[in-house]
Image (cartoon, rainbow, N blue to C red; front, side, top):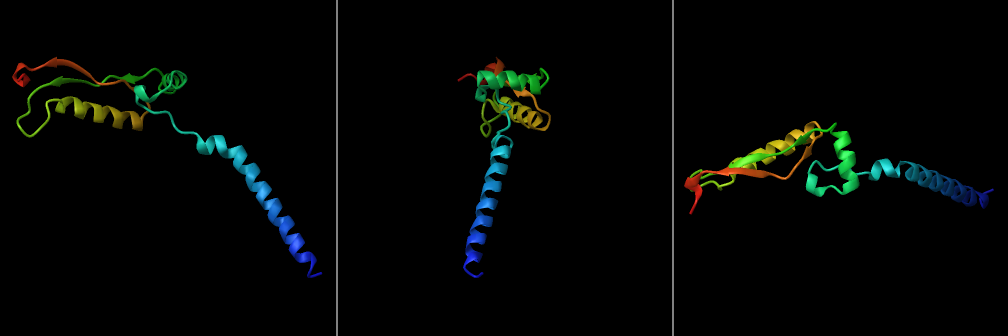
Amino acid sequence: MIRNRPAKLSNVTAAINMLLMVVFLLLAPTILAQPLSVKWEELTSAEFVKAIQQAQGICLLPVGIMEKHGLHLPLGNDLINVRYASLQAAEQDYAVVFPEYYVSQIFEARH
């Protein structure tokens, strides 16, 4: 009886391992699936189609201006802030964020 115990134990261990493997294989697509990026430039063409469907056609275009903000801030400060706000909004309620776009320039910023 004592000799059979390790054999039964190994059978139980093998059965548990097999069960875990089956569960992992069934759940792997869900576990390993990465959510779609909100950034347009990070999506493949197939992912872009899925992203537009998931966003229900909502896309964000961060638009900013290039202007001087003093010596302590970058010239593109407005656009940096708009891009950050767009990405945060898209994370909360899925939308596709297009690359930022500078629409104008304040001539004070020219060097």
